[in-house]
Length: 214
Image 1 (cartoon, rainbow, N blue to C red):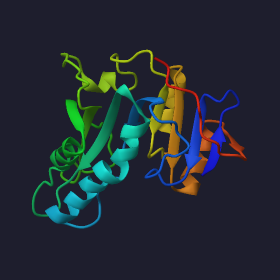
Image 2 (image 1 turned 180 degrees about the horizontal axis):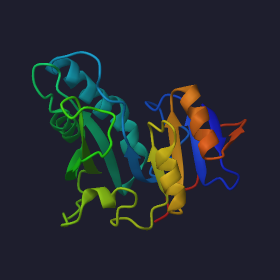
Image 3 (image 1 turned 45 degrees about the horizontal axis):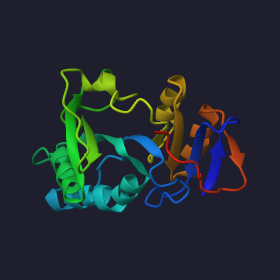
Image 4 (image 1 turned 90 degrees about the vertical axis):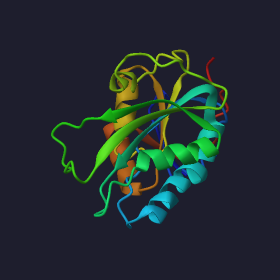
């Protein structure tokens, strides 16, 4: 993987396929916060099921490996009307993640303002998961305000975005004093993110052997 990082090493970006997160040490991530690419191709439940399955199985295995035992997985999941009915993508993703060892801790709706999307085409859900056996007691707070820094694990360090895009999560993490690592498959978008975050390219892409902060 091509690697970019800040001069102090607190922000890192890898250009590659996030199905394999081998440069990231097991258990070293406190928060995974990401918006996977929306399901925009195909119609009908079988196509949507394949999308949900790939998230939970294709990507979820690595998410579980790199996430600390008490870490949080936050997903922004897009839903849309496929011409016949609402797909209900959030339910499909929740179902597949449950089958693969995750438990839904909280669920919210993202009300976009000044959105470029039509409301009859796409809405977004905020889904918070933990590994089996790690429970968060629900609170009466707005999920949107909890997204940047969940209170359940203030001591964790790394924030991971496996679909980094233009690096927006990285900018928020940096503004909150958090260490961030992103993975982006598209070299052009990875370069955009690197420029936004003022990251330099690093020749060697060696695994980070530092343990997660506890």
